[in-house]
Image (cartoon, rainbow, N blue to C red; front, side, top):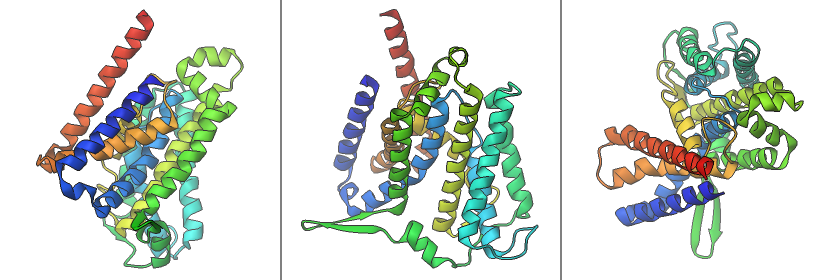
Length: 327
């Protein structure tokens, strides 16, 4: 709880500093753009956070996003190598999610049954899925050619508009989708036996196994959820950008996902974290580069800012852990 309060205070201070740094930061358009980025990267951080709580890690998230966006574009336009017919979005989405579930299942099986290190398994996946994406697309950009406008309006381009007093609030769809999934994850994580199992597995997997918890099953489920959320984010990316570049779509997204979860209080040792914390961590992750831009720092320093913030969060986590254990 103390950690959650601390990052909440930090987020508020960062937001106030952002508003004071530049008057344009308070504009509705800037808030809309921030909400959209929080919604998109929040999906990735949510999947990574759930997996980290269960004691796992996934470095292939960005490549899964790229593979999903590329395969989605080819399926929708009838350019998929093994099936040269356009596939309806109603069928494309389940196919992509099923593919994400298979990817996560493979990761989970290799980690739990073959006892391979999650870092190695998912790092290999990072290269495999990126290479598979480039091979399937012939290393050529895949696009929708302006089609599927109804789906783009439903998932991305047409915001929900609310009039409160004399102020108009425009909520991006990405943000609302993230909030909906975050609410479901909150119920599962904090108000169900499955969430308690994940915390127990991440805290001490051997003790959880001896207490009768099917640790392998729940850990595999966490890997599957992580990959499925990455796939869903890849499809949303496709709807927004109208195209996917097999060689670089989703690059470094796994780092954003892990950074958002860690900034939100998820310990890489497992067994710690919360759904509200993941939301706050993602918001901090998005606001930090925006704040640095408002201060006039070059955009090339964005990764420096994020890396420094992540290092600081890790140092504070270690400091608090040692203080608690010594007290």
